[in-house]
Image 1 (cartoon, helix red, strand yellow):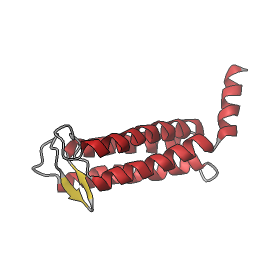
Image 2: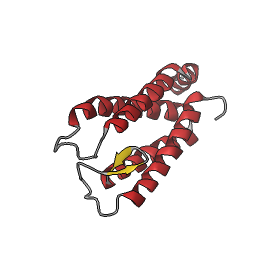
Image 3: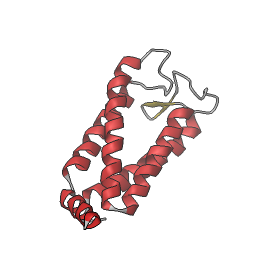
Image 4: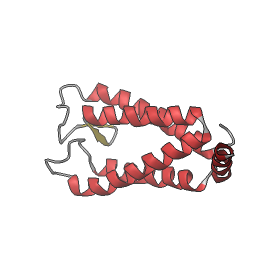
Length: 139
């Protein structure tokens, strides 16, 4: 894992998102599952659905980071792309009844920053390992 930026980032992000998902449940007591305005966890708004999403993303990243370089690279790229979409769409959901994961401005900034880092690492690092892995499958 020390030699793979993808495995390292996936493992760190996975652990952090799992922790955030768990901690989120401590502040969302009494908040509706799809509430458009959540409770703050530091400066980020969360509701129970948002917590569940953090747990799922954290688990996917952590499992991939602990598994293999191709898995970590694929999950980093996928989660990064999803976060890019959520970060952009989230800008238009603030104050809307469609904001079912209770996004706020800080969430959007964090999602966009996560997207840049995950996509950047996923698309640019460990390419030779991915190529070797594909070559060994076809041989």
